[in-house]
Every structure is written in C-alpha cells, then in structure tokens.
View 1 (spheres, rainbow, N blue to C red):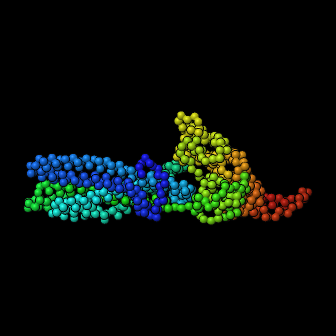
View 2: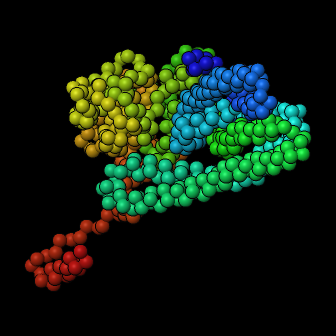
View 3: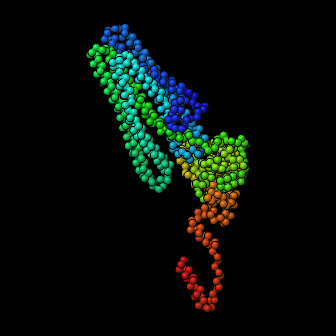
Length: 619
C-alpha cells in the first residue's frame, strides 16, 4: 500500500481485544512495508557501521605505506557513503509510508465504527475520548508501527557488528560483544517508571484540555455570572499540574538519555584501555585498534533506536488501549437487518410504554422525567441503548430493518443537536425526500434573525446560504442553534420525525410561530414532539401523557389540563403544595348559604359583622 493509494478499499477487521493485540494486528497488516523498511534500514545501518572497518584499513595502509590498499580503501569508503545515502533516503520514505498508512487505516476503522454505532457511540464513550483517539492516538500508533522496522534493523546491525568484531579481532571483540548487550539493556529497569510518569502526564493533560473545552463552550454563561476568574484559576492550577507532571516525566527520560550516552562512553574507555594494552604487547596492530574503536563509537547510532522504540511503545500502549476500547464496541442490533422488506409505514408503537402514535398526525408526548423522554426518543428511532422490545412501525420492528431503512423511516432530533462547521448550504445538504425546500424549512423554523446574524458575522457574503457556521455553532445563541437544527430536520422530511424539546431555548412568541410552521410543513407526515410546552401541546392533534414509564392519559391539551392533575402539574409546573391545595379545594364541600341579616335589628347586624372583621384581620 502506497500513500497515493489511500484510502483503503477495506481497512479490515481489527483485533480489538486489547491494546497490544491491536498493535500487533496493525503491524501484521503492513508486512510488505515493514520488510521494505527493514531491508533499507539494514543497508543504511550496515553501511554506517562498515565505515570504521574502512577507516582501520586506511590507517593500516598508511602505516604500511601501501598506496594500492589506500586507494582500494578510498573506493570502499565511497561505496559505503553511497549506500548510506541511498539507504537513508529509502528508509525514511518507507518509514513515513508505514506511519501514514497505519494511521490512515486506524482512522478509517474509527470512522466506520462511528458510522456503525451512530448516537450510541457518545453514550458509551466520551466524545472527548473519541476525538483524542482519532487525532493524537492515531499518530502515536503510527509512530510505533513504523519504528518497529527501524528498531529491528538497528538490532540486527548491532548483532552483525558484534559477530564481525569477534571474527576480526577476537581479543577486543569479546569485550564489545559482552558490553554492547549490557549497554542496550541497562535502561530496561527504568522504563516502567518512565512509562507511568508519562501516563500521569497524559492524564493530567487530558483533564486540562477537557476543562479548557468546557470553559470555551460555556464562556457566554461564565461572562453572564462573572465566573471567568474562577475558571481561569481552575485552568491555571490544572496547567501547572500538567507542567509538574511533564517535568517529572522529562527527568526520567533525561536519565535514560544520559545512560545511553554514559554507558557507551564507558564501554569505549574500556575498549581503548584494553586495546592499548594489546597493542603494546604486539597482539593487535594500530589499524585494528582504530577499527574496533571506531566501530564501538559508530554503533551508538543504531543503539539510539533502542530508546526510541521504548518511548514509542510507552506512548502508544495507552493510545492502543483507548483505540481498542472504541473499536470493540458493538451495536445491540444488526446493521444489515434480519428482514427484507419495503420501507414500512403506519402507526408507531412502543411496547415498553404503550405509546401509539397515529400515522400522518401531529402527536405531543409529555413525560415528567426528562431522562425518560430522552430514552423514549432514542427507542422510537431505533437507538435503544439497552436490549428490549423493539418499536414497531406499521407492525414491523425497527430492529429487524437495516440501518439505512430505519434511519430513512424515522429521524430523531436530540434535545442538544450538533451543528457541523461549514456553510449553511452544506449544513442543510442532508439526505432528503426533495419535497421540502430549504427556504420553507428555514421559514417554518423562524430562522430569519439567524440568517441575518450569519451574514453579519461573515465577510463578503450576501447570500445567507454561503455564510459560514463555526464549530458546533458556537457563534450563535442556544435558540438560534436549536432553530437551525430544526430546519435541518424539516429539510430531511422523513416519514416519521421525532423531536425532543425542539423549542426549549426560544421565547414564547417565536415558539408559537414555530408550532404553527411545524404543523403546516409536516401536514400529512407523522410528527412526534416530546415537550411540556403549552404552546406546542395546544396545537397537537393528540397529547399522550406518560407517568412512570407508562401511558396514563390521552386526549387534547385543554381536556387533560382539566381532567388529569398529574398532567396539569407537569405542564403548569405546579409545586406539591399547590397540587395539594388545588385537590383540597376540589374535594371541599361548598359552604351552606347564610341568611341575610335583618338591618332593622341592631344585634343581628353586629353579629354578622364580627366574622367579617375576623376575616379582614386574618387576611
């Protein structure tokens, strides 16, 4: 796989049972690229480590005054230099290709999983974690995958150098063959502590990033209540914790780096002392001593990759665990569906609550518990977070339909819909029936002031459809975002539209106009609105009241207000004391009629006025 061939036609099925298994799966699916990087790495490292032998031969040729051998050695050095350049160039190319292709494969897998799970993804995994996995973690995993081949090439080169020195000069070769593995493995006891400190640093950095995101998202509210300084202090403390954790982590890695310099230096000193002693005894020549010395010095270059692979694994291990956790999530229902049928139509029925929504009508559902309303909306759209009885559309269970059919038949708009960045035209470019125009949907959702705000906030834009919307629509108010989301849902024009509190952030006048526009534009379609707003309830064809997860009353809004106290308490926001007072007044018997006092008699008049005075005083 080359970079120009991306994306993959099929990224494969990952082994997401654990982080290490996912890393192994990524590397195993790039054997071709790994082998190419390994071969080019062997050529590069071997050529680098062959230079000391050339230098030793050149020194010995100069000592022996042999021009022919000196010229031959120069030719060998030229050949080694050329091999170093070619090997380094193609090693870098192969390594970058492995990095990018591994990251691209993982990103495709994450995108496929997000599309597969839908809204269930953010209910089971935090949105921030999904973003972290698809950005920073992907790069770390790609780094480890490409570093494996370079590390393998470096390790094999070190083994070849040790064997070559044993053959070339056994007396010094033994010292090098024993010393190099000790140098390479000396840092292993420090790696667990360095890894744990790096994990702490990443955890604190994630918390600081989450705090910063929350602060930016709620900046308008913070300014309204004067909480900027409070959150600034919180972020300052969090950032200082990140700094201290980063310093502690850097100290450990600096110790490892220092050992990577100190230990090869000590080995070099030992080799020089032993070599000088052997040269004085006449057991080795000057050229052989220079060769061994240069080989030990040059071999530090491939030894650096031992530290790199340790760092790459320590950073990629938690990233792989997070990625495996996301990729291992499964849907509760089959995406392909178990029933081959045409797109169903008819009444929408929820067996769990007994809710039946008549087809082609405007039905409002009142739930006393907002969480229950959210779960009901998910269930009506086939997004049920837990297994159970499936919602029926025209008698057909949504769980038995394919995912595409279910989403085409029923569209659910959450109470907190997300606006993607881009132009308004791109926002409204959604799969739709083609019946509802964008202009009509915007008018029904009362978005005139939203269009004006978008035009004013964009430079050199006269058409509101070309105005840009910032990430998650942060430049707009909550009500404006809500109305744009409603317009997007109206453009889609599904057979069944489920809206969860679509007007909770708008004023009453706008809400009344939205209710009229929604009823007019959705005429002939099935619309379910989960709300407790009297303005929407009054315009519904039928209102269904749910109490403790079951349907307890059905009728028109004005009827239920007068006949169902629990419904009235939810809609009018009555307190418990007010409910008890109203119930007491309804059940209390009317007082018996009193005789009119005879004004011609003084005593009865005074007796009649005494209770009035008591009532005045008590009032």
